[in-house]
Length: 55
Image (tube, rainbow, N blue to C red; front, side):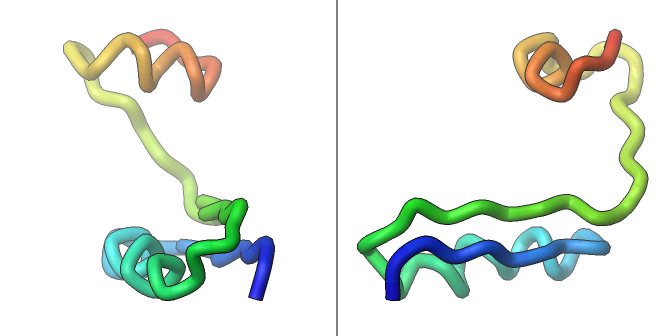
């Protein structure tokens, strides 16, 4: 199969994406978040930095 991209607009799609992509071991794979997201105070700083936001 090769490189794949899946879009996730809600939590259920986001949780399903890794399972859907796991059957193809050739990768690379991308999960594109298409919904708005908020990083609550006290969240993981590494994730916040990668998203370019301040936790």
